[in-house]
Image (tube, rainbow, N blue to C red; front, side, top):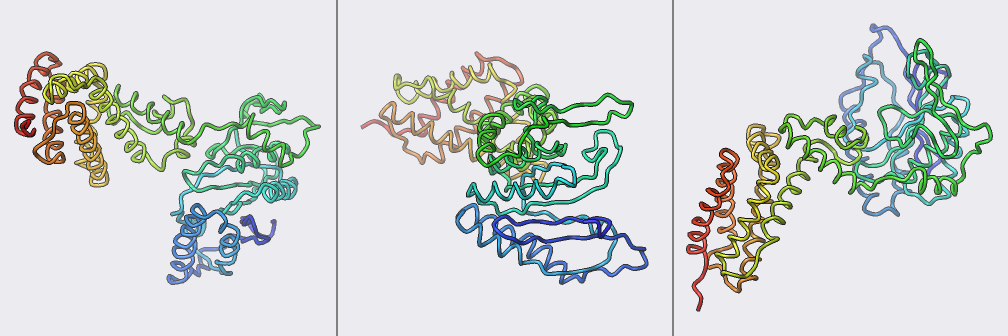
Length: 433
């Protein structure tokens, strides 16, 4: 590990193989870049396209992960080239993942890796991503994870959107026994005081140097102790609950301050979570906005349908729905203003235009379900296609919502909707008979 300026390797669980990478600084006069075809084949076809297919297949059929890991470990052959630093160190990562990385004393790295492998094999887990190991010299940089000691960094990965559960918990527990330090930008469930007695110490010094301590008697954890810690000390919020909490937080932030206020940092701050938690739950802010749209439309639908009855036929039923929606509008005007803002913003941004289409697709589905429910409750039926009527209903509600947001005149809006509903039912309902 000291044979070059920068050394790292990748161990593929389920195998005895590692891929190694050694980088050494040379003068710019010695450039010998990798050939274009070899670069595309290795970095795009094998490292991204093929590896992405391996990950996707393993998620669908976990039993295939071990043999696929053996294929992945042998896919890249030896190569050597010389190029500028940014072309050597930077690589395209098109396969999205979550990462947990711990800095451990370099001398302890072999024992940590051996125990991590033992726990992995004893557990029966299926892990397609390799474990990454790299080394660094000691430094005296404030808050550095390599502060004051020769360091090895050990990182575990899982596909984006997958609960890392006991795999990350095992790495954290094992690294903790040798005073492991969590990477500031990766997933961690480290807390200031651990029930086992390990304490993270912020040593007071002019440079704010940090240290971590653990009980001298703390043993290297076994698979059973890792499971216990995962269940107790390291309990994780499910990805579904985390997504819901972040969506609720985003809705509060943007209902108050508009779409521009909904930065990732503002959302996680409102939710009381870390940025790592956000990227664990969502691929991007746009991904969150899609869930937000579905959530708001669901609230609108519940508000409109909650008070619907069969009294008064289709006209009376839809008036009940309109009254329920208006109550929601008065209670949460910021939600509806945000939805309008989101639509207009998405139409100006080609990358977000699909979001506007998804928004109105959700509106159409909700309107269709509402009209079908109205027919069921009243025993009536629609003479025109419900899909056509749903579009007309959305047009009426859009206009009423925008007008109300401007003048906040609920009585006038209700009166206008009463007239519109009579005309709507007259045009769309079949005569009894």
